[in-house]
Amino acid sequence: MTIRRPFKIDGTTGLKQMTDGELDYISYLTRVAYAALSNGPGHITINSAPAGYSSIGTVDDETRDVGRSQSNIGDVHGVGPDNGNVAAPGSLSTVTYTLSQNYNNSNDVPSTSNWNLGPLVSVDASFNNVQPLGYIDGVQTLQDVYDTLIDPIVQDIEGGGVGIFRLATSSPGGDWTSTGFSMANRAVDPNNYNGPSTTTYTLYKRTSETSPSVVRPVRKDTNGGFKEMTNTEITNYTLPLLYNRINEGNRLVYTFGGDASGIDAGSYTETHHNSTTNASASQLVSGHTYYRAVTGLSSELKYLRLKNT
Amino acid sequence: MENIISTKTIYEPDSAIFIDHDKTTINVKVKEQFVVKDWSGKEHPKENTFTRTIRVEPSDVLTEFLSQIELNKVDENTIKINTMLEEQNKILETKIKKDILKDINLKTEQTQQNDNFDFYNMKDEDLFKLKLQSFEIEQVKNSTNRELKSSLRKSQTFMEAVAYTAALILDK
Image (tube, rainbow over all chains, first blue to last red; front, side, top):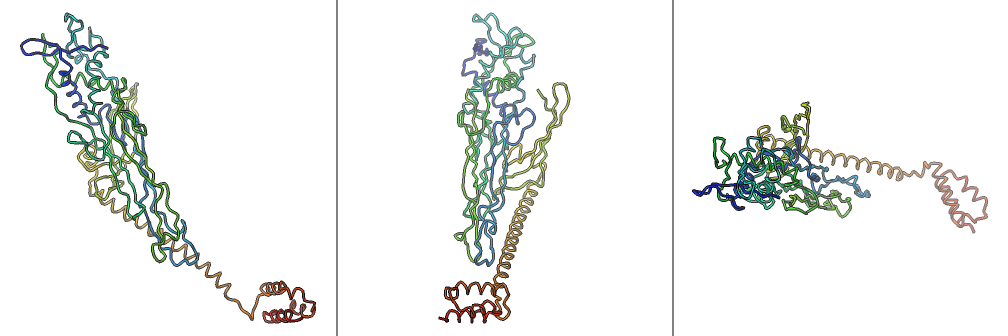
């Protein structure tokens, strides 16, 4: 593992190596750009899976139209009501939700020009050899960039910072944006004749947080000398490497299922009734009207989890 | 690795309904059509179909949905489907009533048939059953009066059979 600290311009004193804290701004810029993407690499969707997306788990939302129904079966002295002559409460419907993750762009690296304009680092301890990070002598050394910049960015997302996703019934806060992808748990009540009530779970992503102090690295200037990188130059350099790290490095990988291990990214509870009551004399409403209701409530908890690296 | 060339999302207008009373959540059928290019440059059209749940709150997905379907249309569909469900329930209830009525009529007919017993026009089969019952009575079975027994066997009416049965019982 080689962490090579990029140089920054330190006022009038010249070039100085950036500290861990000063690298936070690169992480912040990268994550804000990453989270601002619409369905970008590594992003999660619900019931949307174009090419390059992979399922990370599914669940069925099952319900009946109503929780209870009643039928007037007429004057049938001597004929006891049974399932055949008291209607079941509505019919059954199921919606399958599949959560998918975008694994496109997993081989991305910066373009040659962006490599050359990467943050400058010292290749040796005596500062005699200054070159772009991850592109020493024109050869890609991805691990150096992962160790120095990308894995700390992943750690910041895993810590709940900008870029993390969350499945919740309401927005986790002002820093979060709805992806627009939702899933519902419809549930009927055996004690009333209404249709299902709905609990909607929406996939949110964190898109904002307080900016750390602005400290930018320097790069080679093609016109000679050194120059502070712009925000766009920083993200042009880091984003492709973050995409690369998601799949290839098994980072920022989400799962959706019964296993609660990993970093908490929300959950979904599906409830449904397994059957309906057999109509009987005890279910007489009045006169010759009997009811039937759903019965056998069961629930299933599904966790959205982010792999802890 | 495949390259996506284009993606098109098509929402089916007639399938969009509100699934909650507050009209904040929509279920709608959606087709995702996309073309991918393989390593040799060959293009492959592909399609996914889902039921998508969309919450009515600002998002890219809602914006995309509203560019194709108005909320009024969702409202119309919801009313239509609820009315349809009510009608289906009514039809089911009518069918159940009809089946039960049929059942009741059948039973009533059978009961009526049993109730229409005519003493003066007794069927041979019923008369035979009546005579069998008589001969099961201990005093009749053990009687040595052959003449009365023969008369019971030969009786042609309900009254004759009952009268000879009584005579055999009283005959000591």
